Length: 122
Image 1 (cartoon, helix red, strand yellow):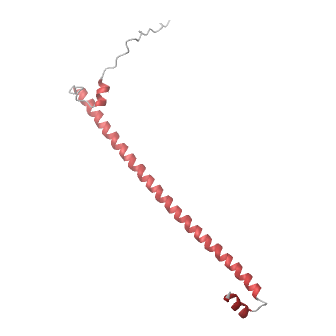
Image 2: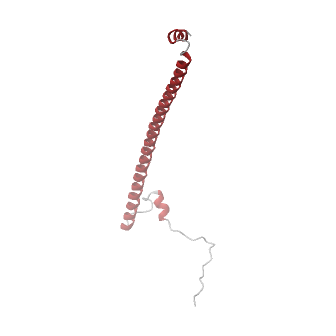
Image 3: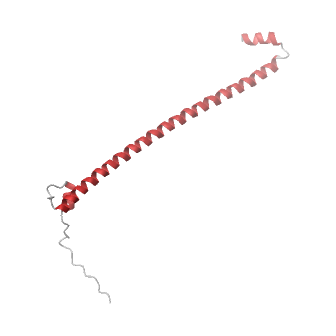
């Protein structure tokens, strides 16, 4: 209120409407500019957050990949060891790991299975 009275006295009643209009336009431009800067800063912050999240996911995937590769290597070594021992004839089924015991058991056909006869070709 005090600013309006001082402006009326300093600028004068003839030019005051034009100055007020110009001040309003400049104020609107300033507000839009500040809003745009805030939006740009917000977008940059979101972009940085997305980049950080992407890096976290990539790190987790890499960790999982390494873990899976280590597990595959471990299983491969175990299987190779069992195969080598089996070839050498030094493994009994009691020394084999539980999965190897199941693999070493002979597969027997069911008792109710009828013999299969194939048609002769002429």
